[in-house]
Length: 134
Length: 229
Image (cartoon, rainbow over all chains, first blue to last red; front, side):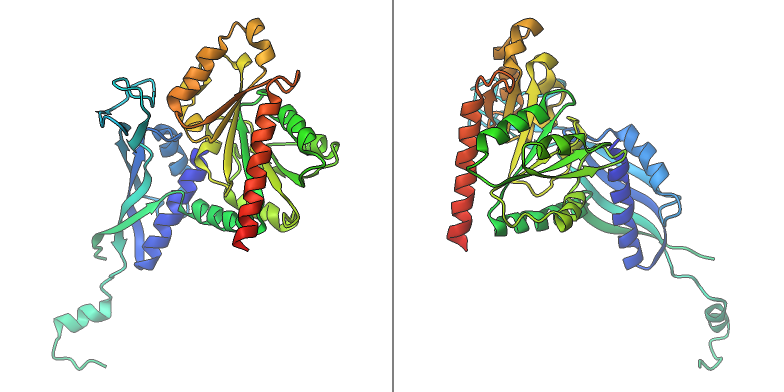
């Protein structure tokens, strides 16, 4: 269940970024997750629900974009998307294939509620612009 | 109270913190000229027995130490210490893999400055350890013929990231009804670049090819560090 460690890191990174921006809470965390990782999306969602508790991400949605595995032959440049069996030897020419995508595990962005509260005092100033500002 | 939703770009790898610690570990190992091997397998592949046999063949020539990772017990560390080799046990509790931070903490208590080879025996598991770089130079995966020929197909990420694959228990191939050729081909299919050694740590068959390869790697590492110093 290494998804717990992964979820902890996701919350840590998102929280650090949110604090840097002085945000009040995190609404969305957008993650790109390749299929050639050992991370199971459902297990990650479950782990995330546990790890977000008591953090700025406590109400956040984890938005996972699945990135399919794409491989390309280093010699004949044939490009394929493996569906079930991963085989990294080119079926056309027998040379090794390189992994083009599918190993992603990256936070793209977060959506936050920023801390720009409109204080009653500022509201008051807006209503009475002529009032001297101290 | 009004709130303004705002999108903030992050573009950060989730494993960033682990990768940074792994890079620091790697730098420390390079400075000391020690070859570090991250040894991984499923439970029951014979990883510790194979490690014992490997250590026996290197003893007297190189200074070796072992960091053991297990959920519970220090049984494996005791087995290594019985060979007269320094061993440090990390017990992870319920965590299914070692990460770079656990290794960094172990290094505080377990100096590696007088070593040629440090083996980190990971928690027996073919899934989770694949994601966590420890700062090692070599990733060595052990699988045994007794597990059947399809392990590489079922755990492609782990096998794909290995530099070396040791196919253990070849003396049991016939009894297990496993075609060694098929298993080797399955490894090759998910990792065309890995160096593969079929061997048996019990009978010793194939061990010499593996250990002389490893000795060569340790020597190259040590002389590279001397040249850089």
